[in-house]
Length: 286
Image 1 (cartoon, rainbow, N blue to C red):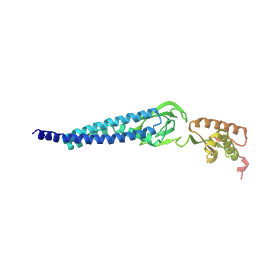
Image 2: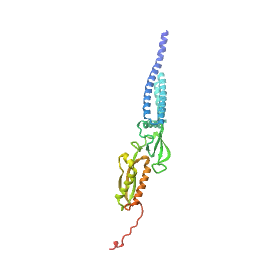
Image 3: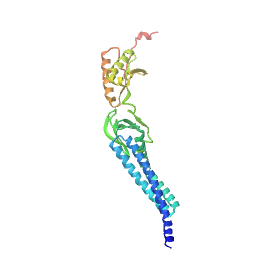
């Protein structure tokens, strides 16, 4: 009699034991997977804050998985798998709708950590926003604004917070992904009466003088090109320069070109103006 009662009790405990074993095995596998993912993300994290974000995200994900497993265990033990499927479906739909932006932001952050389209210190453009990356967090990218309230390639002093969730929707331009150098140019117009060869020589001399170190670094010399304009010929001198030195180098090259043009009588600057030319009246006599 007692043996039969013990058998009945053991039979009643079998579903609970089966559920516990399944939950333990699933949790063991998920825990191993999460630890592996956390190690890989930590290897790619370059700052203390990024490492902290990885740890916080991993801990949060573990809590969510524990709650899901607990719900699964309860419904599995009671035998209502239809209930758990319906409940999880509704819960997933509600969470997906409510947390769409945060989830997308976290996914973008994972993409930033793994793919590294830009690093802290890089100068980037996201959509219409331009700046130097100051920090990358779980929810936002912090940029030291470039331009904005000033029309230049200099920092304005403002900090822009870009939500990670929009990074999948915007074009990202990185000035310094390969190296710190970008191509820049200084342009000026000369009159049609000017010596074009001399104007090109002046532009090239000025650029070479102030960009020699940069040219040696990228192994490419400055070059000059010309274009016709309504009031003269446009001279373009192009050269490589560190992204953060664009404004300064443009200024010194512009000053150098201006000084050299003033020293020669063969080149004149072209600018919009009205000029009256008097012809010899005898030319119009029949």
